Image 1: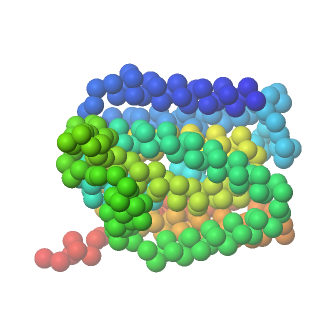
Image 2 (image 1 turned 60 degrees about the horizontal axis):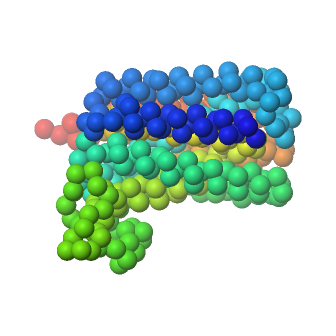
Length: 316
């Protein structure tokens, strides 16, 4: 258990440094800064595979599925890349949320920071629940597989631009329970209005971001469980990918229009993982195949997005 405690302590330390040192003074995060931090977080995420190898080599972590160190590393990297890939769709929705609530760029990092903190807690609970289900019921993997295929189909048919945060069920319910201001009051989540505590648009954006992350976790966690049911690998790969989501948002959100076909890459990844889960008891998929599908899907989506001109740009 001390390995889990140490990992969580390191994550909390990173978050404390982020808020207390690197972002002590609120500022608009420029593309260059976001690019540097994205590179740092991806390096940390991929570099942690070395820690995974060491932990499994020395037997320092419980190994319920009997993984060899090399296999554990491959499964960790695959799980990390799946979560990182699916985070791209999350970025699209977060951009819509910030636009809807008119959150100034200078305060967006604050919302994402607390959103990530909540995401770590919720995902830890969901991962423990998912691993417990898979260890007790073999058939649950088929349920996850069908769900991922259904999600891929819905993603193929839906458009992130159709999402309206202010018409969501959570926003409407909060509006009934708590007064909500229409103006931003600095970085405050709550303000007093005539002696009454009211939520600011910043807080409502945070709540909707949290809800969105939980909904996206319903896709990503089963996808990682298709790779491995080892709880530490699932948890560490998921959390380290999520830690880089903030800097990735500030980097990618400014280029969303350029990556208009990346959604199709995510559909392919989800569909592949869903099929893998449905056939898991009959066909053994090598880890290199999963990594290859992820890599080729993302690269193809990026190349097509940059190569195919926008229809609107051809209209004079």
